[in-house]
Length: 477
Ligand SMILES: Cc1cc2nc3c(=O)[nH]c(=O)nc-3n(C[C@H](O)[C@H](O)[C@H](O)COP(=O)(O)OP(=O)(O)OC[C@H]3O[C@@H](n4cnc5c(N)ncnc54)[C@H](O)[C@@H]3O)c2cc1C
Image (cartoon, rainbow, N blue to C red; front, side):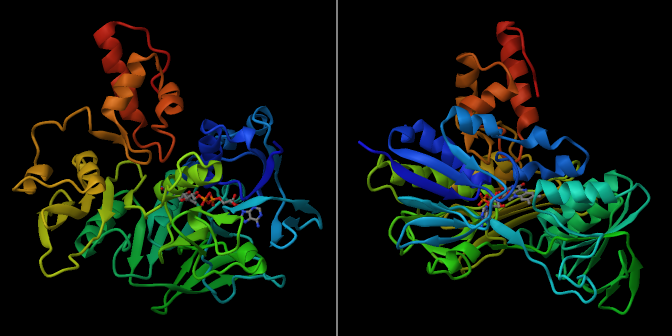
């Protein structure tokens, strides 16, 4: 049987997972796979960009080096931007004027940073002036790294997850950092006002200045950036300005190809677009009116799409994802899931506020089940809560017990890696089967391959297992 040509547009975190999912389903027998990527080289863990910004080697966050594609007979066409799919002739058109045939195409073009139109920020070619950056790619991080010197000052526009992460990295590199946040409180998409205020105090304690309820109106720059004008009439000198104002799905290829789009590329429960043989998933896709900006939904979609493309699980459907976010800023603990406020009259809210400790915990309960939680300053209950939230399990009669639990959660079912939903039970099983390092646990269970915040716990599990059996340890990560 002749193989079909599968063209995947975009080589980001979604594609990286899709390729793994396809490999486990033996897709190589059905498809000749080509991956088109605008960035250079193989896929990398975008979530770990902070490490590169902090000075780490880009290679350390690469999850699929070019050799991986060769070994799997996958054609990687990197540094090549796709401009359009000719859906009638079934051709992938690229910026270099080439057209390559496909039978099935998958759009995985991700998101792009939202760039607010600030006066004075563009040069005559419409490019951002030197010193003004977005934070999305290895290239962005390397350009920022070349520019910043300790003692410089930075303005971060946007007090969400990415803005705070960038602010902490730059502050750790010795810069004077101010975060300017338009909304009244930080991380307003994931936290309520009390949570946002607690977080602000912690961020300020870490040496970062915060201006909430304010925005940057214009950039003061000649050849390079020199400072910003805020909307309260004040100015701030700045050597660099980082725009972390959110993202929007990249739908340019879809639009040029005549696919139905809204905010994202519209897909159904099989991740199919309205045009036959064209699928979309990840941050570029819009499913049931929703687009996503974190990786777990993207990976859940990748698994469904691999089933659909290989026909290995007929009738499989993607039904949407439940959202869980964690701030990856060392020393500042923040986790949030589901809704941040009650949405129905009958929703019950339980809160513990510890003013002196800047700690805050909140649960939103609906019909005895958890529909939302906020944890700032104390995230010890996060693992248990995520599991209850994810499965929709009934809560104990007094849900506050969850926040003040003294007995540890059942290890068999306690989720250790939230990005990949890996339980302690699965990890212990993998260790018993011979996984003897954090890396090996990642290969076997995928734990630790997302945001990486569980890696130290993986190390602890390995040490505990080694102590029990006196086995030698290879590495603890
Ligand atoms: C700094 C940072 C920190 C983050 N931290 C977290 C976190 O802690 N937790 C979390 O869950 N998520 C986090 N995220 C979000 C996470 O990285 C995304 O959810 C994930 O990368 C989405 O995967 P994707 O494949 O849809 O898109 P992407 O990973 O963005 O990949 C899309 C790829 O397609 C390429 N592309 C686009 N258009 C074309 C074209 N026309 N031709 C060729 N190639 C094209 C792009 O260049 C890109 O490489 C973070 C993101 C950033 C930037």
